Image (cartoon, rainbow, N blue to C red; front, side):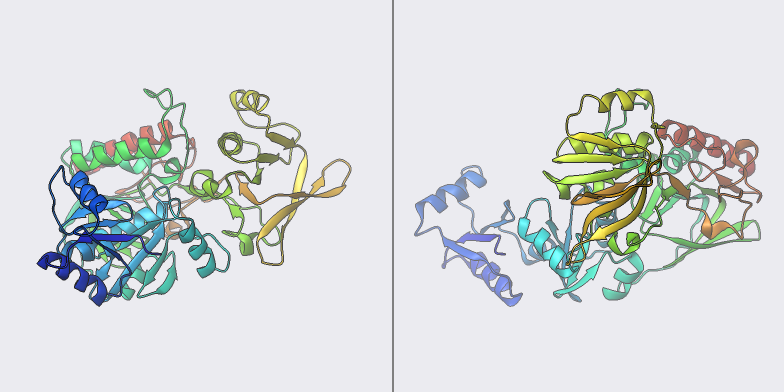
Amino acid sequence: MNDILLYGADWCPDCRRAKAYLKENNVDFTFVDVDLDKEATAKVEAINNGKRIIPTVIIKDKSYTNPDNTELAAVLGFNEVGNVQLFGADWCPDCRRAKSFLRDNGINFDFIDVDTYDWATAKVEAINNGKRIIPTILIDDKPYTNPDNVKLTELLSINIEKEHKIFDTIIIGGGAAGLTTSIYAQRDRFDSLILEKSTIGGNAFLTEKIENYPGFQSISGPKLMEKMEEQATTYGAVIKTGEEVVSIEKQNNLFSIQTKSTTYLGKTVVLATGSTYRKLNIPNEEALIGSGIHFCATCDGAFYRDKDIIVVGGGNSALEEGIFLAGFCKSVKIVHRSDEFTASETYVEKLKSIKNISTYMNKTSLEFLSNEKGLFNGLKIKDNISNEEAVIEADGVFIFIGLIPNTKSFKAVINLDERGFIKTTALAQTSVDGIFAAGDCREGAIAQVAAATGEGVLASYGIRNYLK
């Protein structure tokens, strides 16, 4: 796809330099001679506030005035190890993680928004056998589907040096609880490091609208999390995304945190790892994830504009996301295993006024169905009273049936309850002195953003008491 226009003239040295650089890197572009095209001259003047500056280069509808080769490399993704293209979207958590990692390590990349270019979506599906998986990254035209930071380090020969600084606290998890802990710790003059395996914001970042956070009648999850992140970094917090912790060891009153790429040292640790979406564990679920089965309406809902979708679940998340999806999907069918919703009455009442939402109550999900291309096309259900089976046809399905704490990696380190939640005592203290827990991963926690921020405050007081 040729999205590059180069306005210039044959007599212009910088135009010749830019043309040569693009050709050397096998970039398709259209050269428009301003000496022969009056409209092109007017366009250049309009872009440059009346000045006739060439070359003026248009790349994906954005203009660059006389860009040098370094700037062209940064925009187009040229590196010594190869050309890097990142197909993704701004709302995609893993895309944000990959973009941050590449920027932090000085890697140039060409970001191609699948929401802007239909050809980009088609290319992603072609690469991933029909699945709409982002980020999909091409390095010298070789595709890699959602590579983690460790894989990117290997592919791009990035040199990751060991972090030698000793932090006052290392916070594992960058959701509302982790960010709040960091904000309070920094205000207490304690250096904090946040390690987040995906992207900052946690589950709250994936929520389209939050209407019960104090101070905001309504705010999007991403916006609220961005405000918290900005506040934490303003106070001096260090944030590293794409860092998945694999082990925690206590050595001589210091905690050694090993990630997949390096080691960090801290005087205290806060586990704010949150939770992940629970699955139905029925036939074809794993095979169709990303091929019609999803767990985040904010992340993947845009793929189903004007299409029919199913929502499985009956709690606040299911109804909230179902209402959100109804705003742009053709129809939303909500399937719930009980005869009554467990969601708050506010959401239940909202359903009655939305014409393109229908409900299937007291139904058990039996099996996900797919077409000849291996893409989801329906859900087999059973009526819990009559035992009659039926198939609901749809283009996609979103599952919202609860959460599982992200604590598996820590079961040999601290005490967990029978469900895997972290046991704590006063001031968020775990069974190991110096390790604290906050947010959805903690036993007894309330899965609400406001509650998570409160737990972050509690953990920060535990840090203060321990260090002083």
